Each structure stands twice: as structure tokens, then as C-alpha cells.
Length: 135
Image (cartoon, rainbow, N blue to C red):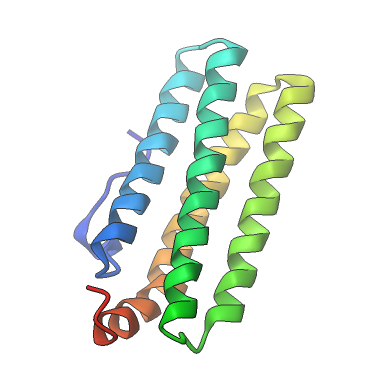
């Protein structure tokens, strides 16, 4: 397994912690698929799910931020946009070439982003959302 969920990845908002666990699961699924030489179609399906899940997660986080007047909304939104754009670019490049190295690059991107983003930016919103009665 490439990445393991641990309590130090919790942000304190169960819905978003569950999303993060799902992304970790997809990173691991993609890792296993690449390692076992799965088909282009299988890799593409995992990449598509990963991109959809990421977009949905970011959208829902931002909705909560808007509804609670989260002060760092714009900075957080910009981080989300950068990630979503990079994921979309990697997926499109994979579709065009079917190069499994792009799947590995995607895993590395999500792995690094999750650990950096959760430990940095996401840790800041848990107390804010909880103090506004979200959780």
C-alpha cells in the first residue's frame, strides 16, 4: 500500500476526512493497478474516478466555506483550482498517450498534495467549521 490513513491526517470534519480516506484508497488502487500491469482502460477508469472525486470534494468544501464565511476561502479555492487543473491535464495526457508513467505522476501528485494540503491548509478549517455548527 502506498499511503495509509492515520489519525494525524484528520481535519476534524468527518465528511471531509471520509473524502480524504477515499482519495487515499484511490491512490492505492492506482498504485496496485500500475504495479500489476493493468490495462489502459482500468488505469483510465481509476484516474477518472480520482478526478471526479477530487472535483466533488473541493466543490463541497468550498460550499461550506461560503456558508460559514471562512476567511481563507479564496486562498483555499486557488489551491483546489491548481490541483484540479493539474489532475485534468494529467488525465488528458494519459488518454492521449496511455503512458503508465502519467498514472504514476498522478499518484505522486495526489499523495504529495494530500499530505501537504491536509497538514497545512485543511487543518485550519476544522476549528472554523466546527465553531460554526457544521460538525
